[in-house]
Image (cartoon, rainbow, N blue to C red; front, side):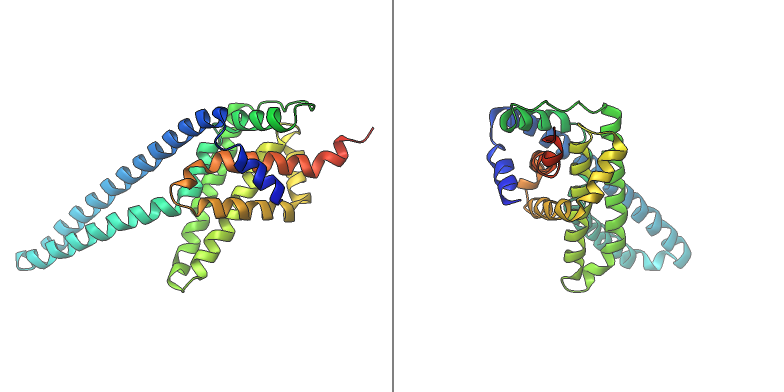
Amino acid sequence: MLKAVALALSQMLSPPFRAVLLKSVALALLLIALLGVGTHRLFVWLASFGEQWIENAVGGSAHTPIVILAWILSIAAGLGIVLGSVLLMPAVTALVGSFFVDEIALEVEREHYPTESAGTPLHPVVAVVEGSKTALLSVLVYLIALPFLLLAGLGAIIFFIATAYLLGREYFELAAMRFHPIAEAKWLRKANQSTVFVAGLCIAAFVAIPIVNLATPLFAMALMVHVHKNVTRPRLMRP
């Protein structure tokens, strides 16, 4: 596993990867910005609507306290959006990564496995659907785990483990689908779930690093190409 991590990291700054990195980061930042602006507009509208409703219900005498409360809630909402953007980074990278899996995997296969046949590119719809499913599942899991953030470090541990499981599962299956049908790729992941989870922990650690985590799709896909090769190589070498 350490060798796979080292190989994935060593290729991060190669020229082909830099080209994919720029596109991946640009798309991730765009999605985060759109989510942030959309969520902020929603909160502003809810605060304005709630302010008017309370003022009509209570009366004009409560105008000043209500304005102050709305102002405080707006600031809290803004901070919440920033925090939410950080917490939702794994979901964003899961979706973004689905657009570039084949470019990343092909470069890894060419660089480290030149004597072996390259994988078959995934149909774009399949890749995006798998990425979207993981992104939505990530959001659901994080919403469920969010209350645990109030319990010391328990919430952080839950987020870390959930990220390791979800991203490990997605990127291994995407790497495996280049060589196997979808059902077999999922079976391979389940058959090697401990290995995939450990690799997922490495991805989760990468996601936890601010700014650097924008490159998560490159690191995660490169890592899982090596992991997939490692768990299937005995089978591939049979006569």
